[in-house]
Length: 190
View 1: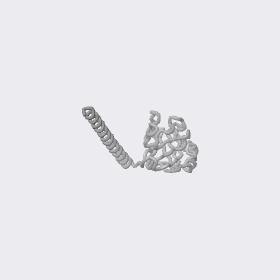
View 2: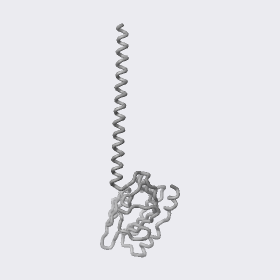
View 3: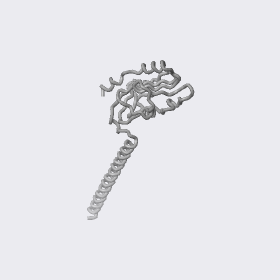
View 4: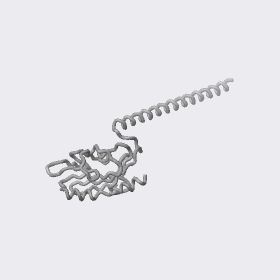
Protein backbone atom coordinates (compact mmCIF):
# COMPACT_ATOMS: atom_id res chain seq x y z
CA UNK A 1 0.00 0.00 0.00
CA UNK A 2 2.89 2.40 0.67
CA UNK A 3 4.26 1.84 -2.82
CA UNK A 4 0.79 2.52 -4.26
CA UNK A 5 0.48 5.76 -2.24
CA UNK A 6 3.85 6.95 -3.63
CA UNK A 7 2.64 6.31 -7.16
CA UNK A 8 -0.61 8.16 -6.41
CA UNK A 9 1.32 11.15 -5.04
CA UNK A 10 3.60 11.23 -8.07
CA UNK A 11 0.59 10.95 -10.35
CA UNK A 12 -1.24 13.81 -8.59
CA UNK A 13 1.90 15.98 -8.54
CA UNK A 14 2.32 15.42 -12.30
CA UNK A 15 -1.33 16.31 -12.89
CA UNK A 16 -0.92 19.44 -10.76
CA UNK A 17 2.25 20.45 -12.67
CA UNK A 18 0.46 19.93 -15.99
CA UNK A 19 -2.50 22.03 -14.82
CA UNK A 20 -0.15 24.81 -13.65
CA UNK A 21 1.73 24.70 -16.99
CA UNK A 22 -1.54 24.78 -18.92
CA UNK A 23 -2.83 27.75 -16.89
CA UNK A 24 0.49 29.59 -17.23
CA UNK A 25 0.51 29.02 -20.99
CA UNK A 26 -3.11 30.09 -21.32
CA UNK A 27 -2.63 33.25 -19.23
CA UNK A 28 0.59 34.23 -20.99
CA UNK A 29 -1.07 33.84 -24.40
CA UNK A 30 -3.95 35.95 -23.20
CA UNK A 31 -1.48 38.64 -22.14
CA UNK A 32 0.30 38.40 -25.49
CA UNK A 33 -2.99 38.70 -27.34
CA UNK A 34 -3.92 41.71 -25.19
CA UNK A 35 -0.55 43.31 -25.96
CA UNK A 36 -1.03 42.72 -29.69
CA UNK A 37 -4.52 44.20 -29.51
CA UNK A 38 -3.13 47.27 -27.73
CA UNK A 39 -0.41 47.65 -30.38
CA UNK A 40 -3.03 47.46 -33.12
CA UNK A 41 -5.10 50.13 -31.37
CA UNK A 42 -2.00 52.33 -30.97
CA UNK A 43 -1.13 51.86 -34.65
CA UNK A 44 -4.68 52.75 -35.68
CA UNK A 45 -4.60 55.88 -33.49
CA UNK A 46 -1.22 56.92 -34.93
CA UNK A 47 -2.50 56.43 -38.48
CA UNK A 48 -5.59 58.47 -37.67
CA UNK A 49 -3.59 61.30 -36.08
CA UNK A 50 -0.95 61.37 -38.81
CA UNK A 51 -3.42 61.14 -41.70
CA UNK A 52 -1.64 58.09 -43.06
CA UNK A 53 -3.40 54.93 -44.06
CA UNK A 54 -2.12 51.51 -43.06
CA UNK A 55 0.59 49.79 -45.05
CA UNK A 56 -0.81 48.58 -48.41
CA UNK A 57 -3.73 51.05 -48.34
CA UNK A 58 -2.38 52.54 -51.59
CA UNK A 59 0.04 51.69 -54.39
CA UNK A 60 1.02 54.92 -56.13
CA UNK A 61 3.95 55.96 -58.32
CA UNK A 62 5.32 59.37 -59.23
CA UNK A 63 8.32 60.55 -61.23
CA UNK A 64 10.75 62.70 -59.23
CA UNK A 65 13.97 64.63 -59.83
CA UNK A 66 15.98 66.49 -57.21
CA UNK A 67 18.73 68.93 -58.13
CA UNK A 68 21.12 70.59 -55.72
CA UNK A 69 23.25 73.35 -57.21
CA UNK A 70 22.56 72.04 -60.71
CA UNK A 71 23.54 68.44 -59.88
CA UNK A 72 20.93 65.68 -60.01
CA UNK A 73 20.71 63.42 -56.95
CA UNK A 74 21.03 59.78 -57.99
CA UNK A 75 18.38 57.93 -55.99
CA UNK A 76 19.22 54.69 -57.83
CA UNK A 77 22.13 54.24 -55.41
CA UNK A 78 21.69 51.36 -53.00
CA UNK A 79 21.58 53.65 -49.95
CA UNK A 80 18.34 55.19 -51.25
CA UNK A 81 16.63 51.96 -52.29
CA UNK A 82 13.83 50.43 -50.18
CA UNK A 83 14.51 52.82 -47.29
CA UNK A 84 10.96 52.31 -45.95
CA UNK A 85 8.15 49.83 -46.54
CA UNK A 86 5.73 52.76 -46.83
CA UNK A 87 7.57 54.96 -49.35
CA UNK A 88 10.70 54.22 -51.36
CA UNK A 89 12.67 53.91 -54.55
CA UNK A 90 13.19 50.32 -55.72
CA UNK A 91 14.65 48.00 -58.36
CA UNK A 92 17.64 50.31 -58.81
CA UNK A 93 15.37 52.98 -60.31
CA UNK A 94 15.94 56.41 -58.81
CA UNK A 95 13.36 58.35 -60.80
CA UNK A 96 10.12 56.78 -59.51
CA UNK A 97 8.92 56.98 -55.94
CA UNK A 98 6.63 54.12 -54.82
CA UNK A 99 4.11 54.70 -52.04
CA UNK A 100 2.21 51.99 -50.18
CA UNK A 101 -0.07 54.00 -47.86
CA UNK A 102 -2.64 56.74 -48.22
CA UNK A 103 -1.53 60.22 -47.19
CA UNK A 104 2.24 60.01 -47.74
CA UNK A 105 3.89 63.34 -48.52
CA UNK A 106 7.09 64.66 -50.06
CA UNK A 107 8.20 65.25 -46.47
CA UNK A 108 7.74 61.55 -45.68
CA UNK A 109 9.90 60.68 -48.69
CA UNK A 110 12.80 62.78 -47.43
CA UNK A 111 12.40 61.59 -43.84
CA UNK A 112 12.53 57.98 -45.08
CA UNK A 113 15.91 58.82 -46.64
CA UNK A 114 17.23 60.32 -43.40
CA UNK A 115 16.71 63.87 -44.62
CA UNK A 116 14.05 66.54 -44.49
CA UNK A 117 12.47 69.26 -46.58
CA UNK A 118 10.35 72.33 -45.95
CA UNK A 119 9.68 75.56 -47.81
CA UNK A 120 13.05 76.96 -46.75
CA UNK A 121 15.55 74.05 -46.66
CA UNK A 122 16.32 70.65 -48.04
CA UNK A 123 18.46 68.30 -45.95
CA UNK A 124 20.03 65.25 -47.54
CA UNK A 125 22.96 63.19 -46.29
CA UNK A 126 23.41 65.53 -43.31
CA UNK A 127 23.89 68.53 -45.62
CA UNK A 128 21.50 71.46 -45.36
CA UNK A 129 20.68 73.65 -48.33
CA UNK A 130 18.63 76.65 -47.20
CA UNK A 131 17.28 79.72 -48.96
CA UNK A 132 19.79 82.53 -49.06
CA UNK A 133 20.48 85.58 -51.21
CA UNK A 134 21.02 83.86 -54.57
CA UNK A 135 20.22 80.21 -53.84
CA UNK A 136 16.58 79.26 -53.48
CA UNK A 137 14.61 76.05 -52.98
CA UNK A 138 11.92 75.50 -55.61
CA UNK A 139 9.23 72.84 -55.88
CA UNK A 140 7.27 72.00 -59.04
CA UNK A 141 4.37 69.62 -59.51
CA UNK A 142 3.58 68.62 -63.07
CA UNK A 143 5.60 71.60 -64.32
CA UNK A 144 3.89 74.17 -62.08
CA UNK A 145 5.47 75.94 -59.07
CA UNK A 146 4.04 74.83 -55.73
CA UNK A 147 4.62 76.03 -52.16
CA UNK A 148 3.43 72.94 -50.26
CA UNK A 149 6.88 71.26 -50.24
CA UNK A 150 6.90 68.73 -47.35
CA UNK A 151 3.11 68.84 -46.95
CA UNK A 152 2.25 67.88 -50.50
CA UNK A 153 0.47 64.50 -50.56
CA UNK A 154 1.92 62.31 -53.31
CA UNK A 155 -0.54 61.47 -56.06
CA UNK A 156 -0.37 58.73 -58.66
CA UNK A 157 1.49 59.67 -61.87
CA UNK A 158 2.53 63.13 -60.65
CA UNK A 159 5.88 64.58 -61.73
CA UNK A 160 7.97 66.40 -59.12
CA UNK A 161 10.98 68.66 -59.42
CA UNK A 162 12.78 69.85 -56.32
CA UNK A 163 15.57 72.25 -57.18
CA UNK A 164 17.97 74.13 -54.94
CA UNK A 165 20.38 76.67 -56.32
CA UNK A 166 20.58 79.83 -58.36
CA UNK A 167 19.10 78.27 -61.50
CA UNK A 168 17.49 80.69 -63.91
CA UNK A 169 14.37 79.95 -65.98
CA UNK A 170 16.30 78.09 -68.70
CA UNK A 171 18.09 75.89 -66.15
CA UNK A 172 14.80 75.11 -64.38
CA UNK A 173 13.23 74.22 -67.75
CA UNK A 174 16.09 71.77 -68.47
CA UNK A 175 15.53 70.20 -65.06
CA UNK A 176 11.79 69.94 -65.67
CA UNK A 177 12.48 68.33 -69.06
CA UNK A 178 14.75 65.75 -67.37
CA UNK A 179 11.89 64.28 -65.31
CA UNK A 180 11.17 60.79 -66.59
CA UNK A 181 7.80 59.34 -67.53
CA UNK A 182 8.30 55.94 -65.89
CA UNK A 183 5.55 56.08 -63.25
CA UNK A 184 2.80 54.90 -65.65
CA UNK A 185 4.81 51.74 -66.37
CA UNK A 186 4.99 50.87 -62.67
CA UNK A 187 1.35 51.74 -62.05
CA UNK A 188 0.35 49.16 -64.64
CA UNK A 189 2.43 46.46 -62.92
CA UNK A 190 0.58 46.64 -59.59
